[in-house]
Image (tube, rainbow, N blue to C red; front, side):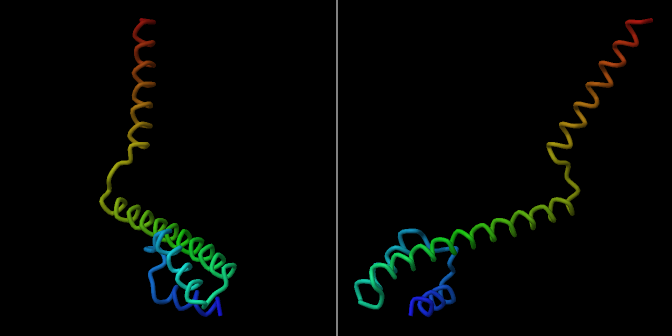
Amino acid sequence: MIELIKKAMLTGLGVASLTKEKIEEIGRDFVEQGKLSQQEGEKLVEDLLAKAEESKQEIKKQIEERIEEILKKMNLVRMSDLDELKSQIKELQDSCSGDEKKR
């Protein structure tokens, strides 16, 4: 029974959009209506929270990948690349300064 309820909820609701409070409310409602035991309700809440977190992480990953693709297409410089170039320039300047002092 609990698996059927979980599948129906996961299908009918955007799991990633569910808040912890809403998931707990759903679990309490099923327990109060006698559709699930207290233990089954707690398991349902636990499983739904895990699925929600999993979905959020997957969405986050997809967003980050998409942003990365867009940035590549825009041909923008990353701060880490810019910092590396600044460091190389500084090294070259220091090297040149040392050569001038030897003259």
